[in-house]
Length: 237
Image 1: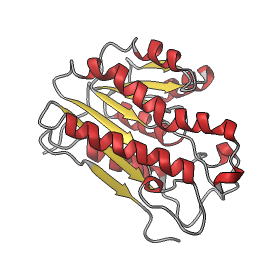
Image 2: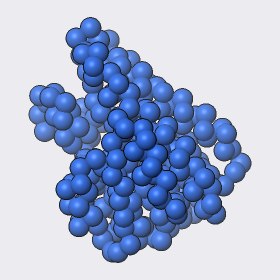
Image 3: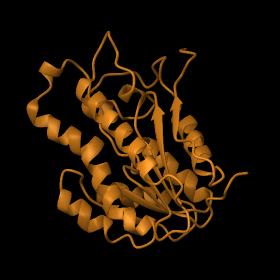
Image 4: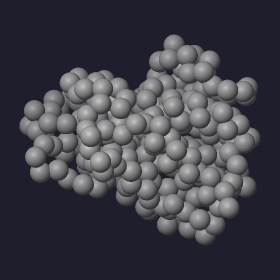
């Protein structure tokens, strides 16, 4: 048995681009009321115009500004589903990473998720059945040996730890906590930080596959928890 997302109130962090944007569009088509999040007002306006139906909203804040996150997220007074999707890529030898970039990576990939979830927990718990879906990465559970993304991996391990611990904290309660672990996707995720990848590399997934996987997780019978789902391209072509 699956459940409907029609009428559900959903907040998706990092939803002005990439996977988050595609997911927001799909959930709106399924009748959900979507709150999009970003740090660029123009991009927020653009994605709101692409959503189906009415009743959608937005929050504007930068995860590098903790007080802004707290203030803006506290304005959300109804919520059934929180999707922590925002993140920033990093790769290369750790010694080549600028020390000044580390706080930004930590805030984008971990601190913003922790703050957002904590602020919105009281609102989520007012729902008859709420869900938290945290987007991690296969990079957070598989450490490569031929190239490195060490800081990124450590932060995505943190996402995994938070997801697993929060799931146990709310076990047998009316809030379901899940972790999603995708491989690399055909989005601008890598190009945003200057990585010169082709639009399609053999290991990349079509992001719509991720959208389908996440919708599957969100629509399971409330008794069922797809606590962790890994999605990779196993036919690299």
